[in-house]
Amino acid sequence: MGLNLHDHRSLVARLGLAFLLGWIPNVARAQDLRSGESVGWQGTGSCAAAACHGGRTVPLALKGSEYTFSQAYDPHNRAYSILFDDRSRTIEKNLKHLRTIEEARPFENDTCLRCHVYQGFSSEAKWTRSPDFALADGVSCEGCHGPAGKWLTAHTELGWKGLSDTQKLVDFGMRPTKDLLARGQSCVECHVGLGSTDVNHDLIAAGHPRLFFEYGSQLAKLPKHWKVGDDKRRNPDYEAKVFVLGQLLTAKASLDLLESRAIRSLPADSTSPWPEFAEYSCFSCHHELTPRGWGAANATGSAQRGSLQWGTWSLPLAGILPSDLTGLKADDSSSTFGSLRALMTVADPDASTVAVRARQASADLARLAEKVNQGTIAPEEVRSMLGQSLKFADNGPKLDWDGAARRYLAIVALDKAAADFDPRYSDPAVVNGLEKLYQGLNLPMRVDRRGGIFDSPYRFDPDRVEVEIRSVQAALPNH
Ligand code: HEC
Ligand code: HEC
Ligand code: HEC
Ligand code: HEC
Image (cartoon, rainbow, N blue to C red; front, side, top):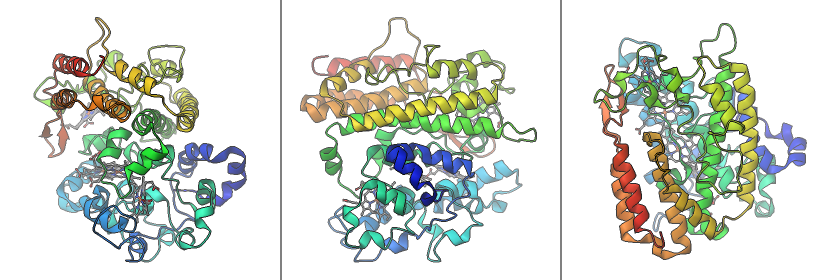
């Protein structure tokens, strides 16, 4: 994280932890992620001693085995080593217009390392890392728990347990990972992007996978070195809350990224693309229903600007979220998102205005996320949200791939949430219906003309997806 947490103490004392968490990315961005200037990254080795987190491998996921467990299962620990493989080299070759992949050294590109090692990584600022820090560990403990320079010793001492989350964060730089909002904040920094650390269309066209983050499913997929039972004890509405927070966090991180994209494009000599293609539905330009997949992009990318869909992955699914979260509708021109969307879909959106509006909308979302995090989502609300996620308006527009995939993820999350209150929701017919729905969203891998690998939904059929969603609805108790 590119900031000296101490400098902000008095401000934090006034504004509180919640505000700080929403605010970290802005500070980091302001410094353009010249990170870690004053914070020490210690490296995984410092956590791995047998007496600390490297002990007791069996049974896994018990206290003390976090390191051994992560080494064996967590996909994050290969995040650096994959930068040596051909796919990464191809991305780098395409980006830098090199002749061969042998010349490409993505493992030395700070842009890659800021997500594939830690947020704000700088190869020049070597003094911010302990001599034992090993890039080879990939995204390691500190990527989620915070740089350990100030807390490594302190967290083993008597009295540490008595400190509040705010003290641990502000005085020591340790992130409150038990807090679902703070936890998700760390994920989106790498899984959505942060300031100039950006998987934009240039990177995607060079072969980087498109980033589509959904908190509930990503958290579920991650092999865990903690007990989800503890999460559920702290949050009886765990599944629903993670889903709702994820909607707000993903949107907020995307708006922060939009603001950064807009600002970066402003200087007269800027080489940052604007408007940034990755803001829009990929399928507005790449015609999904042809077997040629991505390669079928309109060469100018602009012939159909009028039909460009903005924010199809990132905007909150307003119709599904709890009814007291207002102001999120993108089809209402008086809402924050409505006015942004109107701006973003004109031929040449004014970057300064977009930056200002994006920042306002981000602040609105931070407030809503805080409210959700403090509250509890009631079982009736969960069932009502699940009902909404299965609904189709009569003669409404067909779902595109993004819309269908997000619906699927919402239904899975809310069905799990409902099942936590009422076991009848885990009916095999529902599970079976969801499985069929998932098959319909499959993205076959394809190889493009420059050797890049990408996923293309060229077999996607919106009618089939609608049928599957209706069959899930029919299988639910009391549908
Ligand atoms: C904004 C953060 C970010 C940046 C910048 C970034 N990546 Fe990634 N990268 C990710 C994430 C997150 C994933 C995992 C995507 C997923 O599976 O959901 C990923 C996945 C990948 C994969 C696929 C890995 C696999 O197991 O299939 C490759 C290859 C890759 N990145 C290479 C690179 C290279 C090379 C660069 C620099 C040119 C780079 N990345 C820059 C975040 C980033
Ligand atoms: C992808 C993010 C992520 C990474 C990487 C990560 N952690 Fe965690 N860790 C979490 C989350 C989330 C929790 C659950 C909340 C909590 O207990 O703080 C957690 C919990 C823990 C706990 C408390 C477990 C318990 O049962 O109370 C320890 C100790 C821990 N992690 C150590 C580590 C170590 C050591 C590493 C590196 C080998 C590591 N973590 C890597 C996210 C991460
Ligand atoms: C410092 C950056 C960073 C942070 C923080 C981070 N990730 Fe990741 N994550 C990555 C990268 C890079 C990859 C790709 C690794 C690869 O495939 O080799 C990845 C891969 C994953 C994967 C496997 C890929 C997939 O989509 O199946 C999951 C799941 C995941 N992350 C979940 C999380 C969650 C949940 C959090 C927050 C608790 C989190 N990550 C925090 C960078 C990060
Ligand atoms: C405004 C139109 C537009 C949007 C929106 C758009 N693209 Fe593209 N895309 C293009 C054009 C034009 C090219 C060819 C030029 C280039 O490589 O940048 C291209 C190239 C690509 C390529 C390289 C394919 C090849 O054969 O060279 C990939 C992969 C790709 N886009 C994926 C995506 C994804 C994923 C998204 C959504 C996140 C997306 N695009 C959004 C217009 C667009």
